[in-house]
Image 1: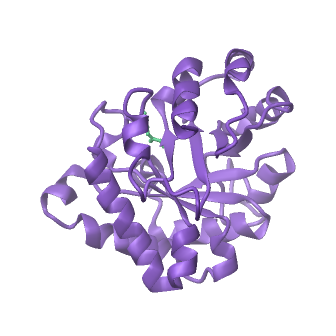
Image 2: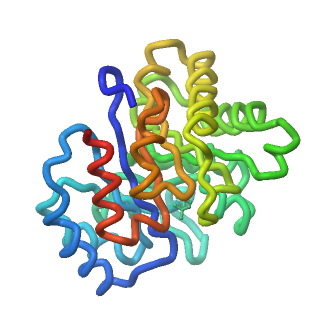
Length: 256
Ligand code: 13P
């Protein structure tokens, strides 16, 4: 973290978990533990249908609600899809885009991710853009090139002012849901490379202000060590964000 230049952001990604009842129970359980956490922003990204309920449940808390995806068009014949404007309209403030699960299971391309980012920024949503390598790619030694490519493709066409609303989450695919966390040094190195890539594209000022999260089996135990890396400015948390105590402990670790 580097609080002098940029915000720390702790975000939960609930994926396809928790119905509305569970969402309300989670809110009741975590709200007393949230405290004022003045050093960092806290976000919870939930399934589409629970966004209005989550917004209501967290109305009086210092926590923003986000979505986990959106479509890149602003209307049209796309059965089952949701626009960025619809998300904004029901109270979402953030949206996760380009998650590896969407790239893998729904064939989301870098091109589509870039279009989605533009659509989301266009309606005033903040975007959490995910990049990350597979185990095979890491073993082939192409992690840095791949991440630089993903970052460049995602950000193509965005100007400096748009970058103020972009967060990049480094999520090594091999660390997601596996209990295998990247070591703090491994994660810190790739996050530094992301900042280096953004510096080449936008210059030092934009790169310095960019919030870069780590995601992949981040939990109450390893959060402090990961967040101590100078280029890791927060976390995108899956499994541990489903447990109020664990999520609250990660938020507390970001506030030390
Ligand atoms: P886990 O924290 O469950 O590994 O998930 C990480 C993730 O994919 C967050 O987007």
